[in-house]
Image (cartoon, rainbow, N blue to C red; front, side, top):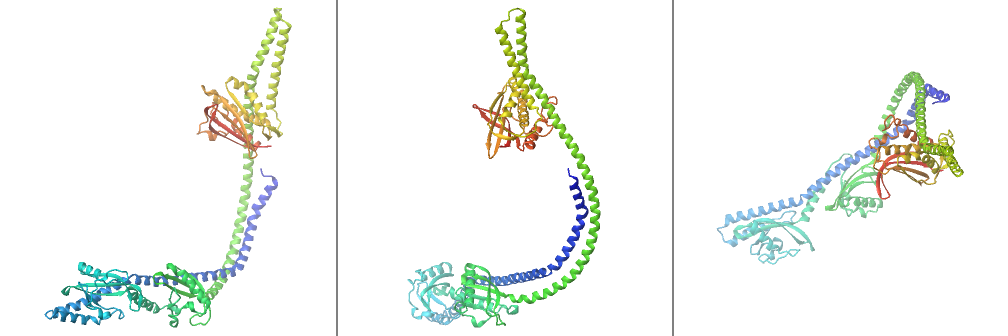
Length: 637
């Protein structure tokens, strides 16, 4: 229960605490608002800068990704476009040849053939790289504008750069399909050492069993596509002189706002800082990589000063390019300055409003606080009275439980005394009666007299020791002492041994000599309560070996006392309630349900230990038994 001094402190806290707290909070709030003005501005400034940078990062990323997707789409369609172009050209040549044949087929075949060859010989396309060729199904070269001296020759054994018989493959395809695409490898006129992939289209010209075709190096056609794409990127328009740049993985500028540097190699520049920037960008872009890079640009367009720039780059691995776009961080300064002016005006206005609100709110809270304090004082007083009342009831209940436990123990002890004394008293009575009878018959011998007197004396000594055991149990000595746990165990077993004998209960005592510090008599009461519960369970059961095994062991500074029986165990539905007051499975005439409750009270509160009970299966002398197991844990002395 709270003492008077503590009660006064609590009352003062309730009365003055809220008021003091409100005033203090008001001062702190006002001061913090003023001090934090600059911090708010700095945070807003950082936020603006961060948002500006993030917004611009996302913007340039979207723009670069858009260009990247355009390039990827165009690159992916390169072969499709080339096929369309080649097919269209061959169809045009086939139409020309067909028209010439139809209009002149009445003429000599050689004349018509020459007319067709002359009509197609000088036609060029794809930046003058493309031309038409004609071969017969007999593998004879009919038309080859780039090597006229080979016309009329047999190409039956002609192989491409990979060793394939190209003319045979084309004739076989055209015979089956009438027309079709075919790829092969061949050197370029400008590069006789290397082989390049070429795509061709051929179509059957039935009047003379020819095939008319054309081909194009895929790389050359792709270079045309690249040029168109770079022209497209170069002409893209963005505000504030922003631009997309394209550089290959060798450092060569392919597209830039400064047209004068297109074609130059950035890695060959004397500016080591730019050199490193390009290397970093290439490293990010490899394997279709992408990411941001910040660097100092030597010159900003329109301003000959070094400026920090952040760019987003994305690699296009197939063409060994990286595409990028950047923004200059100095563009944010004007935005921050304008925001600062707005923040300062807003802060001044907010400060006035906060001052008015703070004063009004403080007044209101002070009034409410005083009302609440008064109410809390009344409630606290009522709560004190309730605690006192409940504490008295709890104390009375606890005393009553302790008294009931003591009465139950006294009842058990009286029963035990009766069991212990019954046989010695019977023997004393028998010896005395025998002496008297022999005396009356005048047959009493001295030896018989001495033996009977000695027997009576031994029985009297046994009764005296029994009285000492019971008197020690009921001793009011509450002083803690150091003792060996075997002592209270033996006292408990001596008190109950007659009941063990009468009920056929065997005690297997293997208790150790561990020492603890506490109340010996209370541990005796604990052991008696536990063993008595086992005895009561044995009385309910027949045809089983009645064993109680008492053992102990030490571990990590504690001694563990275990008590097991073979009575079959406790119902799992009730085992968790076993230590509750007034809980019992016995008839009302046989128990009150406070024995194990007081047992737990003694172990946990008086002896600062723990006790738990559970069902256990164990083997003893080659047989398996089931029963309750109580484990007591106490600290070693």
